[in-house]
Length: 188
Image 1 (cartoon, one colour):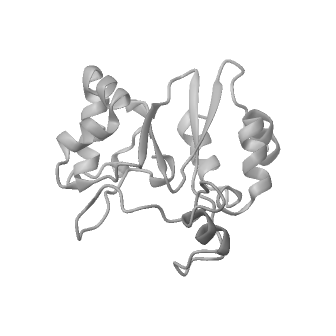
Image 2: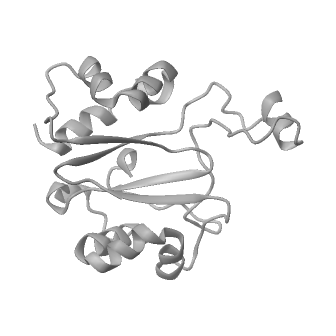
């Protein structure tokens, strides 16, 4: 199996968005958790697995090797896709994007808004280093209401707590517009 095929199987696991125990096992020992969940899938021993989790305050975007992108994944009219394509084509641009993602995105996509407190990280998959992305944990509270714990955190009584919602902040969206599309949203 190719890296992309394994990542596709990983990304299609429903447990990623609704099983906190699986997510914790994946963070603690990704190789073992994947072996238990993806029967028959062999991840080469020389591959280092690194797990990242999107939260309400940070987003991880994983750049796949250029050979891994398929023709149906490409969306040429999307500005974010153009930035990702430029990063894969120009090593110095990619290095700069990985060092200062918000600065580069602000320069390349001036109409997109990223809150100051929001963090963006770019990672690149290689033959020996695979970055696995865990989306935000899905909760039953999707009505936009704050829980008691969240209200307490906002009021300053419980320290800083993160909201665990599937949807994130409106980063990368033109003011009043839609968010950027990415080739494989679950991996970026």
